[in-house]
Image (cartoon, rainbow, N blue to C red; front, side, top):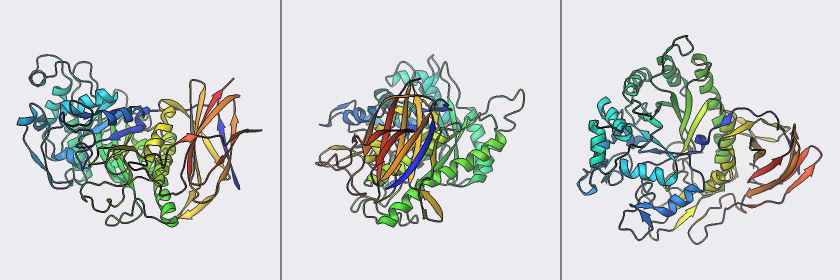
Length: 507
């Protein structure tokens, strides 16, 4: 059995891992909203004002920090006034991006904000730049957050909500390089400055404005957005019109037309997917480097508000609904991303997996016939990582770890990260080897170990997944494979597995 050593200095905590790195995304796409979050008040499924309570209960297990809505590409076709007022009188629209279906707008601003309240999550509202107006966006934030007798506050009260909501995050359009307008970077940068100016702070609500950023490795787009902000480090520099730029990156094993199957893959495709997932480290580094040239003090945040696996849809489902199964492979793609997020927490301030329910790399899948809900393997990785929320990062240096050459690069077969909070260290470990277990030695320095506990996520098959009737084919269990070692702790990590070790620290 191969052995890997991971050096962790427990007494040298770094920056804070924001809980918002574990954010989520809900778009009007397929069964994400309708049948996922929202079933209507007449449904036999338990609900509050139409919002599914089993979905809310499950997501609260993840301490979901924020939820992005209404898109995605849908955001730049969405006009918020169509989604307020009595449901029976709301106008319909065509969802041309996702399935070319008619949207009845029964889930709108009030429903979304109530969902956030039930979840205990911060709202991340994405505005319409592609087909909207500056006035439209300005009035939406006024409607949401203003308390006095302004026109939009009065309209909100007429629609049943007296007190304003708190909206900490607002997106200035989405994918302006593509579905959000097919713009050039410099043209969008000017619009981002203009639109963001009118997303005003009303009362005590303070908005963190996020400009629509680059696709994958388009460093020129990030350069244009940062250049448009001017001299951030100059004395007397005023506040920036936007406070963050976004980035989108999806993991897939084939070209856009044939992305690969979610469940039918061989060993080579397993490693290729994980190698593609590891690319997020390079992307975060490169975009951060561009930002550092303009903003050495890191005043502007980087937001990865779309990430995750994107496979071919499940056979027999609407290709525009992006419904895919979720296996152990998806879980390890997530764990690899989180390790990178922790290492880049000084610049990366938020991340939103795509998407939360029934779309792409979802946390939850609901059966359209029975209404049954299952937690996916990815859900469990999020749950196992709650201890990293708002903890301080610890360097986890992998020494002499084995690699495999995949897709033109060396893929580390052990991925790790660590954090500390309240005299507890949480270590995350992924064994990406399909067939071989690894002996991992945690070389723990600087503080004593008072005790530990561990959880393990794995399955017999790398393609194992959860379905109604068999909801726990991939589910975490208590793990007894951790032992004392002269350097700290020793873990026998099974093949294709993910583990977290919670360590109680002494002096």
